[in-house]
Length: 351
Image 1 (cartoon, rainbow, N blue to C red):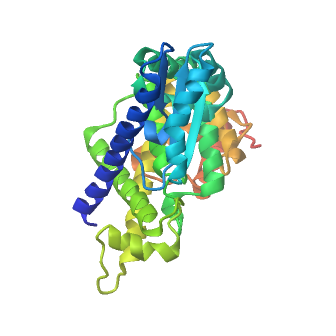
Image 2 (cartoon, one colour):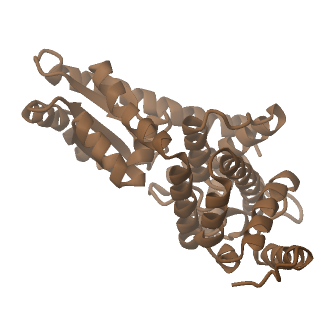
């Protein structure tokens, strides 16, 4: 892997977001800057985190005070129409601070998008108040927040698979992909008491994140599309864009898939560890039951306390050892949990 090329693509993703900030801020201020209505333009989601791949959605929100809807609509039009004219995929919303709080209570995606909110232009106090609604709602019920993230991760696993095992991996949504890195960031932001990531692990995780981001940017750049699935037909061109070359006995595209899989394992391991730490810092027993019920193969462990406890132990130990918690692991957990139940005189019956 050409690390200089990886770094260049990652830097371009950050520069792409900064350039768009400057463009949107100019348009927003030209319309809203001289008015009496307090307005704020806020970046959300991936744009809020300060990176854009060539095919990324541009998610923005205009925050306004009650009664200033007309001014907010004019400002939003000035920002959005040029983006639409260029064919950019754009998510947008106009909300008061009260609207933000109501929406984040109702929808996890809105909550996590606002956890990544970043002011671009306008009234900074209004932008900050909108962003604070997400963190305030999340920390009101941290166990519920973690449960919701676990459930959303299980849904992604069912839909997009596991990055390290896929021949055509989804670089964003698969377990071990970029969305898992987002999840780790949300956990740290809402639960500041989580143990810090050790420096050696942090460096490896940053390298994995850079590789996945660079691969995503190269995929969008070489295809001109927005898909995050690294299809077989695109792997050779993405490998070339990342500076990989064929060597005797090993094609560049195979090396790319191998490197992406290794990065995915590293990311999934780190997120497993963060979820295990989150379960310990909130309501361990309640979260363990939700982990057991959230997804296959964990669903097989539902209904037996000794198995749930064994599952939580395996989750934590797997994070330390790098073991994959798959169907085989669940079979081992079942055996360990039932043995523990028999030793305690409880029988250890399964679901």
